[in-house]
Image 1: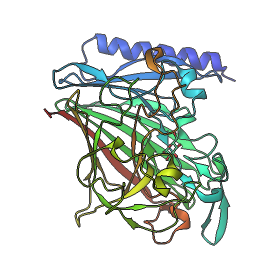
Image 2 (image 1 turned 90 degrees about the vertical axis):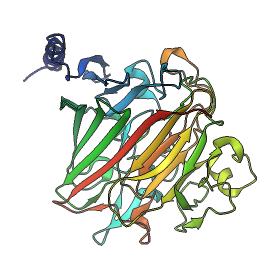
Image 3 (image 1 turned 30 degrees about the vertical axis):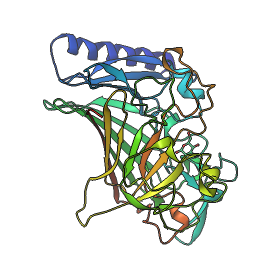
Length: 383
Ligand code: BGC
């Protein structure tokens, strides 16, 4: 029987060896170190992806989590544009899903129940009456295995996790793979997700990064200007479960088809904004006939000049304006994260899809392969 301690030591030796490779001049290799040790004794890797344009992405094998993303402002000064914690304990005990990979099912499932193959499936409930982001212990709280897949034109980290049959109530053994790709010449972070199962199940994977493009995470994101390429959204009930309607955004505070500050209408007297305590909704993305990546969202932060474009193969995007950040969470560098100090743009299939036949299906058949791609692309501009 191999002890946990021995496994830990082997991991650390591996990590140190990987770093020797860097020092020996294999330029395209990732920088690897240990981020920390979980309460359960697992060694967690910290993987640094860099490119020729000064961008740096840091990902840890706990939750396949993006913990830092440094991008330049219009003056060429780099700053971290995502929220997170300084140490592993923050990620293990935190409830905000900062930067985590979300699965098996991003967002909510009503009552944690849905029909599949003529039977009702019950998954774990962790959000009042509902299931949220994969249940009590979602993929963001699991230990993944990381492998360097860097190429000459990009640094690539592959993370994998096997979710056993019945985990959190979901049927089927799900083998999941996520890659983070930072191209050498472009300031964009690409995330690909793959999954296969041995029994019919559902799959809806996403990333839960909170962005603050100002680079100053103690500030609110209300001045960021947002565009969402969507003319409809999925209204919700008071527990944030979609009613099934695809409602036109026209004439509502949900119309982001032209650039407008996130804060411009967030306090309007609107039932949907009250239910979400701000924006916490899924937008139905405009799809052209072409399959593949489409521009879903654009965000501009006026003081830094940073621009974020989100491209995805998914049919929906959850725009969440950080309404549950209450100013109490202490993040990286000991900074207190203000109310609405970050926003999320979670590319996804619609919440509660397994209970709505009119939503695109999230069912993954035994033997079939799930694949989804999202790109977070950065640039700067003047006003
Ligand atoms: C959900 C919010 C939830 C948040 C958790 C978002 O994806 O839509 O309702 O509170 O994740 O941090």
